Length: 232
Image (cartoon, rainbow, N blue to C red):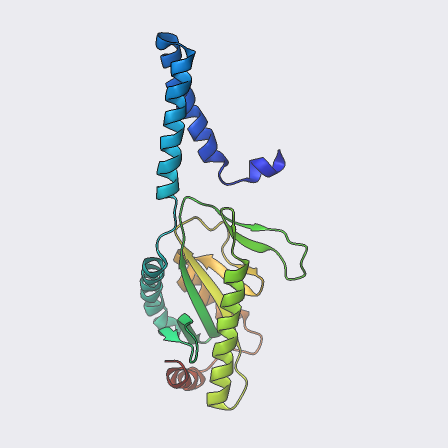
């Protein structure tokens, strides 16, 4: 029962049962139970088809570009806090794109913009793995998505280190649009995850979060120029 109660599809099943009951009762009273069951079943089938269409994820190309545009606007406003950003840069030799490489006082970040179906909840599920809890969007695990975000950050760090001749740390982060994110910032498997409206607040707070001290304008500019050369 606990597993059923935690299933994000439960509200839709309840709604479907209520609608079917509302249809069944009057038809049963006026026309008999057989016709009532028939009409209730038809309504349930129609609702299932409707939900399967409206709940499907937005096509990837549309989703990414829409989320990227919104993050770009927020990052533009973050310039007053000393942050520079490169957008939609391809990692050489791959088909992978870093949505936003952000450089400023708080360090260097590979920021992934995601737009998800707002009807499915965002949550974390405890894991036996030492890596920590897993991010879920409705019933769908985002473990692979988090792993890819870490990989993109590692690739950016490798390319920047090759350009600059010294080690560069790039922190992976993910910004989510659509569903409500029930936390301010959560670090899940090494990736900072937060809602779209928290982009500026996140980067303003990073300056205080660094252990090595903030990057100077000169350092940030040097890394930004190296990123322009290293990422296509």
